[in-house]
Length: 376
Image 1 (cartoon, one colour):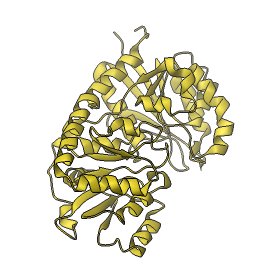
Image 2 (cartoon, one colour):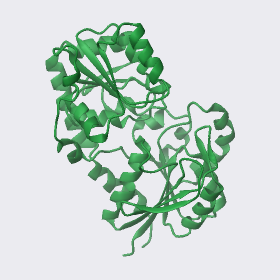
Image 3 (cartoon, one colour):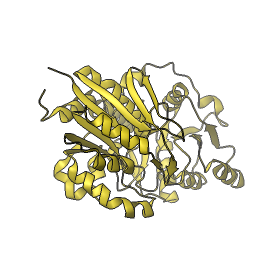
Image 4 (cartoon, helix red, strand yellow):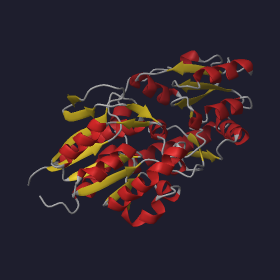
């Protein structure tokens, strides 16, 4: 039986840092165990010429780009490379939203199987969406199968309800062993102002939809806790200024960027993980899994996306309304004051990761979906 030939298509690829990029890397590298030949096509992150390389054994083409506008790369070379590479593909797997890929598909003449991974609706770029919508509808109609990480992605989408029969739930997963087999260090404990404080942890880009401003407002009403924020972004300076102005400097620690090993140590060392995102641009929140695998309860928000389908309210953590600092503060205080509740929710959180989000099981399901109906 010949190898199944899969073309993975996304905006960017490792070493670019991002949840979707991490996922595409996992798919590209791990599908090979099922007699699959993967090639990956992305755009250059900055203006520059086309780059051909192997990344951990995976052939990757980074097509020359004219730059990025409205969060979308522009590239004539991408369209040309897409057309060329599609001729040898049994399946093209596109990670969305990525308008350039929709356009490339339209011009490619490709007749084979098309799989889409729907990570999020376009939320912020309303003007782009107006122009993009007809192209988006074309690709959704063209697709043979659409992957969503949770039911919430379908229910909360402005587009997928028409295509529910094509949708298949394919959760994001993590390789559990990579998290549990680490050298644990008290990376947060050693930074505590008060060694008896409960350690609350957040990691992510410091951008508008992450809701870190709401988290800081909530922390003015939180008792006996200290907050650790790992990440950088455009709001970093304003968030630090807010913490300083509201006398939070002793209980809020900005850690900046943490390398992967230190990030895992931080998850393992915290008592509570918080994901306070405020809009459905936060479609899943893999960081929840990364905290849950260490037995940590999660406080998340009731977004119309996959977020509250990852850590479940009252089972593996607490869910509060988005943009509600009072409700968030109440949830943090509730867990901070009750160690037994934290441990009970955390134990169930770790088990939920093992049962539902183990990467090995996810890759098997992905292979089954991609290979379905392909004659080899």
